[in-house]
Image 1 (cartoon, rainbow, N blue to C red):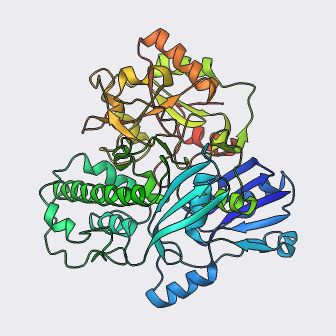
Image 2: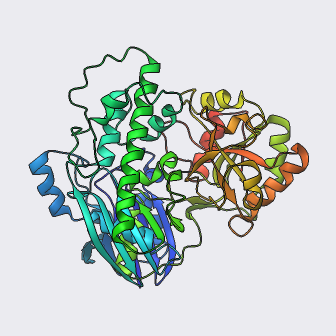
Length: 483
């Protein structure tokens, strides 16, 4: 039986396809219609999904009716309009759609892709229908809700409010605020920021992605950095509190953490000593809930083999020789090979890889990608030696933790101003081609690390297909893409 999971009419529209327990396809609609964070399931992604067969059933990631009611009561938060993907293909109109709650889809996406047969699940985001944070317990194939927070109490909206306050786009550029925090003094505005979110179980003052009663002038960039640092610090405090509460009401030592807030790698690092095992599916936000809805419909674990689930740029093997040649001469190379990553982070198949030994690589690549100059980059390193270079004791294949770099002067391009690196570890079984590329790079550089960032420019989706590759090469004639 083929099940489609759908997320649309909200940011990060996505479509996933499973058959029995196998994930056949999962991707973001933005990669096809080229509109960043698109709300629409577009015809191009539907046509690609149909290559795997017509669906027998369709699972939708939230309850539209409850969301409409919430928007009528509180206004148009998190959802601009409703899109009807079934108009794209006449066959889809005849297929029954089963709806799951927003937070249950998140929970199912995490738990049913994990290796656990029991777990504590924590879902934290801006808002679903009404819920903003939930705690669940899972055993075998059953997921049971234990606790929930409802709008307007919201970790995600708190963070989005300060994203907007410093001049960034709420709901989209929270990751930039996280990067800004490293340049700030968290104590300068600590009391001021904390009054907007004094405890996780109390209603904060921050509503509708705007901070009320903020009467302190923001004069320069340093003020913004200091606000970002205070916001990150308060978020981490509240996160640790709710995680401690989750531990107190659920017996499992396995944590599944999902929702958009699970993309905050700085805060995630604080959780490592709290749990025996942690699983954060590499697409924990709303796009990943397309897979969660499909898995919820199936009602059991799916076979998670990795995040490379999207459109394929065919090649016989990973272009290691071409990559190494470009790195040797230019210190930088674009790669678009194999199936695209499902999730917001490039993990080797739609990446820019670069020599991390020179600090000026940061400014060069940020300029290439049209990003702010302060933005950090991630290192990719072989799993078995990651602990020699970074303060990390377990695999981190999806860039979900920011840990201290042990030799920052040797690889300055992948170390943030606060001394941390958002590490991607790679094993041979996880990605043989990228692993062997790292081996070859070490032979010529004596360094087993490469800088890894997404193959796109700011406010544009990751490169998806061969047409995107040719467009990139035309726009950047000095950088041919290795495929």
